[in-house]
Length: 303
Image (cartoon, rainbow, N blue to C red):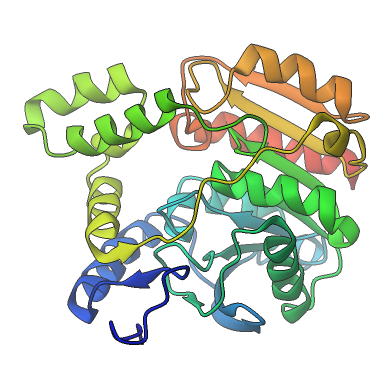
């Protein structure tokens, strides 16, 4: 249950009230229904709160034994955002999707995790609670920062790290926040205008009704309490030895794609980096089939 206003902490995310929370969960469930069938849901207790985890997996016993995938979603969202990816990924190997504490979802935050050391400890405790000693970690946007931070600070459980248009490579600029607010405003536009706005903003949220409803419900229901994460320095990136795969949208506004696709492999030994055409900040949604295949090929090359 969410904390009362008297108990609410300034540095911990919370729901505004139960009614808005339940409406948000209903919107999330509509997206979960569009992805792979859930095999299980589990709560993992950590030092920072309760992490809610969605489990997907193959029915093939051989695939069941393969190194699992762990998905970490972007800011202001939850594991439902992976609906275009869970079926393809879980056909190949077990998949765990985490609801990050501090974002709307079914996790319950009790302590802040936006500090890099705390974030790495939270994720390591969650993986340990799931009994996972070796995983392919995939993160999008803010989840990409969490994934990159893990590869730098606590890489012991990581078989690989895949970053989908991630934070953590550059300081978040004004152009990204303008895009976020413009996208939210566009979700309220007349239905006839939404396809044009979606193409202009590179924003699938606007034209996928279930995704649009979830995002709008989350903005109303949940109060995020954390600053934007700081990027890793060049010296910090140079220490990473986890196999790294960076996928950037050509029209990303979070990072400068050409700059990072040249910079990251130069700093991180063996890192692979690619730019995806005709997309912005959400390549795994805009080009799900292509991205799913590339990620699976990368993991197969390591396993």
